[in-house]
Length: 293
Image (cartoon, rainbow, N blue to C red; front, top):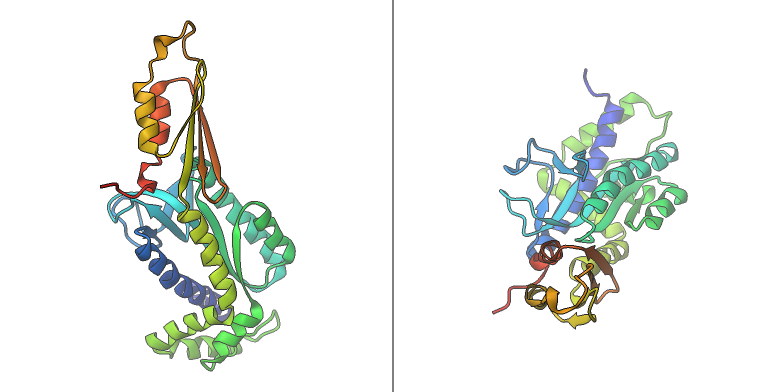
């Protein structure tokens, strides 16, 4: 069945939003040695969709994932999950917010040891309730208003405004004008959308950087039949546990408690009965550290 012009134009706006985001995230990934996963072929996952599995092996199709240690052939450790969405009417905004929550929350729990950034980049008409809901769940939100979308398209001769009474012939005209744009002007249109709210874009990217570029400040290891020890690096923490003599006390070791504190205030904790599990937990953070010479 052929797409209706109305649906096609809505899809066009979504594509413009995505085209604005890709170079932004790609530049960030390149600068900080991350891999950007997005829609397209990648040998280490099936199909073209950016699909990730949660703990229960449920598949979630995402827009963008920034990874530490990822390559075209190998999945890395997620540093950020970022979704995009365009909606024209408020009646659809809360449902979309819940849909995004449903995709990201299980993955955030699956990769809780990595404490990834979770963000959404929205455009169009979203209620304050929908935005508040996402922020309350820990999402960073970059929101381009409907007026910003209209302003960006207007610069390239396209009236992007419409409502439920807009005629099909008008949608057909909007699509035709957009498709007549050169590839260069389409890219400029997407960039123009970013410029309509540059301060908000910079704030979102700063929030992304604060999480992704955080540094480990201290690792505390508490073998419970002994005293706690503060160490400055993951390597030192691993060496401490490897060398720790569990049989030097009258009572056998009960468990290891580990706390990793970051310089941005994040705190990750783990409790392990087995030495190997404690070391395995710490090793999952090694890709986050720069290689030491």
